[in-house]
Image (cartoon, rainbow, N blue to C red; front, side, top):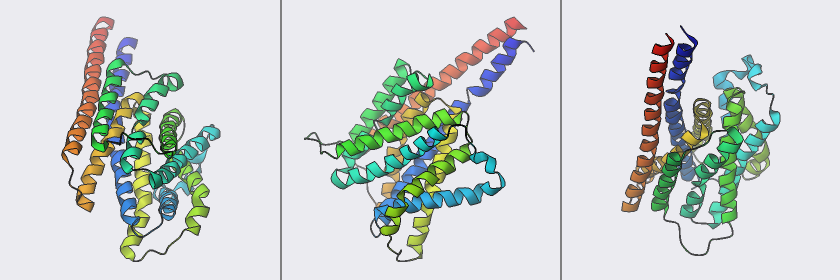
Length: 314
């Protein structure tokens, strides 16, 4: 086989990985929606600090037990500890800033600010990761963001000072996503999964312990213990997605969370989506489908180019 054919074969194997990455990140935000739904339900009887602490503590415990990390301590080795810790603090910061922001602001306002993260990811992915987004992908991101605004319909009045906290949460998540992509190419996904949760759990422990309220029944305990599973599985899928696909490709699919949240809100809390929610969700879906269409077209074009190159080279 010629070198041209070998290169073509390699590219054919790599291009479909983007679709797997898109599926994984969509699944990740489904898990995060499950986590948010569980936290909202538990928030009716338990302090938020306790829920956040248990989310990270159980995350660590499940990761250690499930993957039997004591048998492979090498996954915790890292050549980039500074970036690992920074990434973990970004995850914690996103959670903490958002918690304090929602105390003072409407949920629609904090959500709309949070969904600006793909803009930051896409903008910084170029200079930081050399993953530059084209005009069409930027347009898809903008359209998806418009869909989220249709759903959330944030107020047009003077913004509360706590919006600064929500912006900090959004920026923390964007940096978390970017550092995940940076580390995913060289570090162990299991190590990244455990380190981020361990650092966050350690930092939030004093607040979680001091706010502890005994769960009222077995069902509350089950839900509380499930938070780590939702978060752990979601972040593992997020890490794997960034191994397989560039950050600008994955960024628009953050918007799928609004769809999962709408569905879970209806199933769990009987919240019937309104007309604006349906319209906005349709716009979000359309934006995501366009990205999928573009990736499929690119994949076919490169496959055709590989086939032509292979016939010449042979």
